[in-house]
Length: 300
Image (tube, rainbow, N blue to C red; front, side):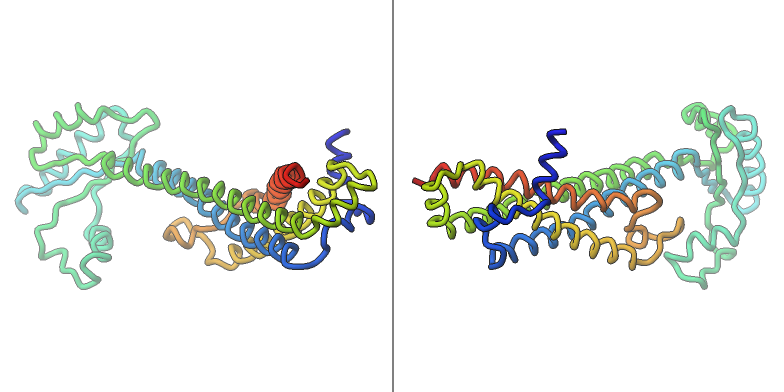
């Protein structure tokens, strides 16, 4: 009940108290603009954080249950070793399926690096076998020992060396996103503190008169808190709306797309920007309250 009264007092105008705070001027513009700019950047920081989380999960899931077997052997022995490798994989616990990639599939894998005119059939390219694991996985050490004994030209790659750096990189980007989000909040608090302090200094004479007629510092501070919280909330709402619209205009994310085209919100994540105006108002409230009480204590 007390919280409801506090919130109601913040957004219901008080004509008498609002006379203490200048309704226009550079402090009003600075507060609204800084809140809008910080909220706009916060939307992108939030989108970056969520996209990094999705990217880390996708990379982890796609690479965690798959492996690649590479066979290098003379041409006259290649088919024999492929058959032997497939037999070993079929009898290995934890292997769900295994199949040798066709020449067209291998060419498609190499095309981004060598172009579409690569003569795969004329080059001594190793044969690749795609291995899919079960949920329990297989014993990679034991499988390598069997392959070394039965298929000398086979090399097993369980994608561990690829998966861990990619997931770690995506996780660090996610951490940077949350760090940027916090820094944006801190910058907004600093700007609003400066604006509130400037407004208090500009109204020193008015505040002295109010004190002479019996106004308490809590009443004066409340007027500043209410006005600057409202400005911070409105500015943050404008910035969050603009940032969300900008994110919505980005290319649509696809499963096979790159990272930048996936920089956006999906599903219920579109509701997350609604939290930014509330957070912006909370930051403005805390910053203005601290600045007002400190400035009033400094005034004679």
